[in-house]
Amino acid sequence: MSLSRLLNINESEFLSGLQVRSTRAIDSYRGSYTFLLVADPRFHLGLSLGVHFLDASFSITALNTFTFVKEQVVAPLPLVGVNLAYAATHRLTLRGRAEYTDVHYQDYAGRVVHLTATAEYRLTEHLSAGAGFEHYYLDVELEKRRSRFDIEQSWVGYNAFVTLHF
Image 1: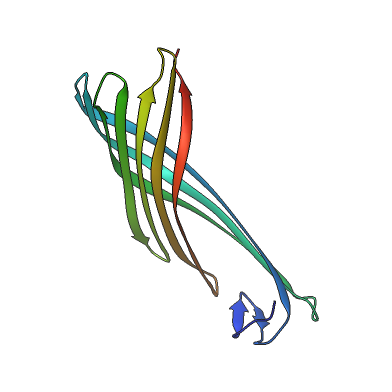
Image 2: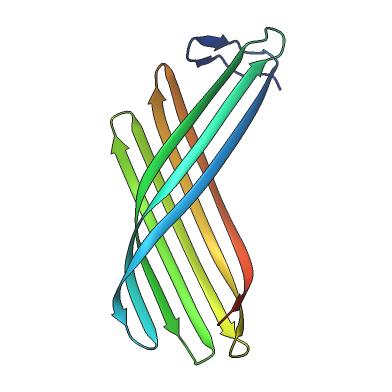
């Protein structure tokens, strides 16, 4: 790949037009705990608190000058959310979850939006199947030494699942 503009990372300068090879790895983990505000047999409503943990690394190698730079960004982002479940019938349950954060602290900024909606149908006493929709957006910016990192990714997708009940 050839660079389309000048790139400065730490003390290394990569000129426009330079042939480079780059890698990117993003690992993302999420954990949360939900406090039920309403726990009715047919309807649950809860608030959740949690953390979204991002571990991202980036490397770039200039092919003709043997310049190599690798950087890593670790960013914990606190999450707040709303969870709900509604038993439309004794076999059909609808669930939704929305989680959000927008943090600005010193040289660090991050935002996460995570939305899910599912429908689950109980086939038997111990088996159910379902389908759902998911939207995820992540944007993290970090000024580190003389480098600026901006990681942005999003996806929208559908899922199908099977649940075993014991």
